[in-house]
Length: 112
Length: 112
Image (tube, rainbow over the protein chains, first blue to last red):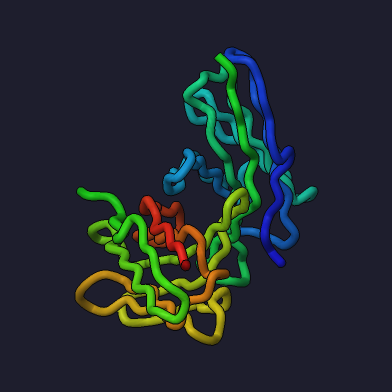
């Protein structure tokens, strides 16, 4: 399976703290994306990082990509209660065209 | 510009009935993806379509499931003779090209 895996499965932090989530995958990628899902809703795209990039920022989000380790991390700084959601990584693999494989997700709870 | 529209939002079917799930992609998007999500799990790829073409259906069960994206009208995911195991949230996503996905709010299918 080319499905990614997020780690940890669940994370609970206090408001204001930083949250770090990791994603590992198995085969080479074109790009890796992070999505957020609020309970019962569709996924919302957060950030895309290409295979030739190592780090990317968007507001309070920082994503890193290590293709040698086949892993990525998502850092949310100064977390807010509204950041409570599930976060998924999705990988676009070179040899499968436009198919996106999603991980199992990290459930983040930010306690006010 | 309306987002990806899925309907119905909730669909209840008895075993053996047919389920039809509809997805209207965002304007200008020619790529449509269908995913299935079980509670507490990530999204499982089912099928990737472009207008009038199925590009990749490797994630879709060979029997009872079919998908189409006609030249005019929404994309349809059709499940014939539904069974309890088909109960899940089905998400549609569209994209204008290779890159990020825009998700609908999903259809929650419940099979009694």
